[in-house]
Image (cartoon, rainbow, N blue to C red):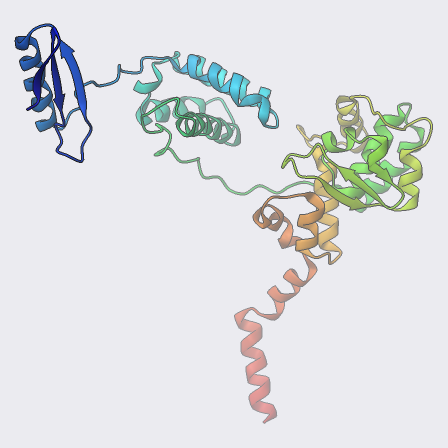
Length: 335
């Protein structure tokens, strides 16, 4: 029996979904209340609805961003950067109730942004928002689907990654010994000769500098990696005027590169990393070795430089259908 007398109360003990289902126990002052509750539970079970549903999540997007910023942002590289992106998106969307954010609303926001912002920036924003909801879902902060799951990045043509020519490298190396700030000159050489990101080179400490290699720890992938160096670079890094700890001088380095080499607008110190990778491949370097040197988490990232390989270009002239046809004809005639 599901209703029974228990002292001065009436107890409801019921499994509305059968013996294997959830057990519901409640106590009431009167039998009439217990009977009405029992009927309510059974009716809800028939309708396949929970007898005690959770309150609807009415938190706004800004509240969820604050949770993400407190719990997760400190654990990832450039967490402050993504927090700024998320807050900007939240403001653009009018800080909606997060549960009510729909793919249509996001698509409309994306369309508006395309009128004033580069596609690559919009894609970065979309990934940040998608990552926010993925994290919230995994940590149990939300129990509804990710509104970003149906939103795809805007497809773009792959752009060329500019790199310095041999002439530009020669000009740069010729000027560096005369640069008044030794940190700038030293870090440019480190990035140019190891393919390191500027932040990785700038974060070098004395104990991570060895005569034949540098140990980078402050990496984007959070994995430590070692890159070989020659004696000349080792001596330069440890010279009295340019030894670590290095000051933050990326702005000065960017200004030097743009003024000395007349680079396209918007070029940053990352061109030094592209220059290392591009010349490494053009000289016949192995793409898997390059992946380890650059610290890419996937080979797909490194394959962006594969088209520069000399054998890649050679095969295009040797293995195209016209050349293959001529080779077959020559072989037939020879027989």
